[in-house]
Length: 283
Image (cartoon, rainbow, N blue to C red; front, top):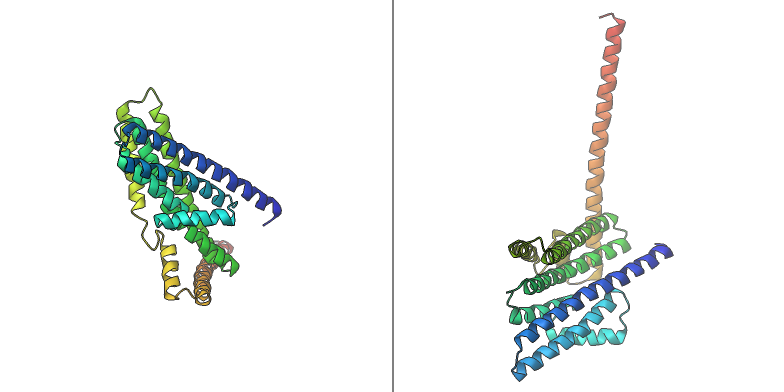
């Protein structure tokens, strides 16, 4: 990969990280407004919720820095302390977990704004699950590229991109509902129906994410890692074996196509020869 592409990738990561942080920051502000409207007067509850919002703000910064590859060792250490505090494996997971807890405790979903906030929380939970799947697939793709297991890398990249596209499509749906919320020509019932449909779709997708992964490719890889006891040599041998298998299947398929094409050409040439002889005989 050339310098231009590396620089362009860094710019894309920075832009994506900024956009994501802005979306999440807006959601935190909206959740805070919902909490304030309910006024949790008990001292213990208020202290707890303030601590969670404080942690959320820190996590949003760490997540943005991590995605843009600017997280310092000290920042990573503080992030890990928060992950341990909440028993989470990664930053998106704990962000989604905290926002979901606040949303469930205080959001009555009794207004369009409240439903809009709830929908963004549901999307955030789905995105966190997808993030973990994408991280696992990217790890497999990187290892495959290093081993020059091109067929495994290509298949993994294809699945990876399909999940990225799916998440982008869901976010487009969510943003479309926001525009409907502000559209004077749309009735409240129309917004409510759209909210219900997209919420159901997101929850259906979330149910596909299991402990060992959503996609068959990642589940197989994770099972292989467990079977190897984490031994990197055996893991890499398995990836190379899979690559040879898929390469052989494709070559076999290409060979069948080649044989079929040759047979078709022979049939056509044979047919032309028969026609030529028939004409020569004057038949």
